[in-house]
Image 1 (tube, helix red, strand yellow):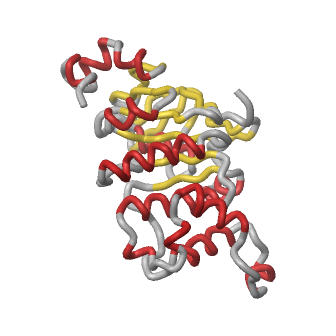
Image 2 (image 1 turned 30 degrees about the vertical axis):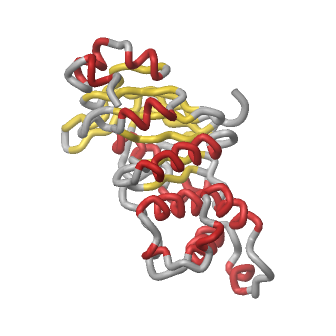
Length: 249
């Protein structure tokens, strides 16, 4: 594996005595699409909330040599860690280009933002191309399809040069065509970046996951390739109830 890795070790999160995440460890590397899966309440989103500083976690979450836990949210963003939410957080009233301009501006000085632009920023052009949104430059984000809004949010992370993309249920509510396009997008962007997908859509996971961590009640139930976790009787029993459900679809 080349490039910096994300290594999470013994991650714990408690809320008023309730253990939401109880000692989760996993790693993620450029060149793979890493999935965290599990039933509702398994602790998937809480893990990435802790990694991104939205909730307090103990243990360790290192990006290369840099510890993320205990840092403020904006400092974690500056280290190159980006995330999306289950509902896309884009500026509906602004165009696709304006949304990307704002995202790209987070790494620019205030004086450079005030200067008049000549053409489109190369990082924006590249992000538009990668996400398939080149033809939507002047489209208000509010009238994009559900899938396109998710792609715009990913594009906003790309123009910020995120090294790590933590994506929370990116294909929820998408059409089949949008799901396929999203899976292919994740494979493309994972070539040089760390991509971690929180998901409980088994079909999407089977098609696009390189490695999988299965969570149950805040703990790691199983880890490995898709084939390895599908063959694990604990996963078949706890996650889906029957072995047959694991291979349907």
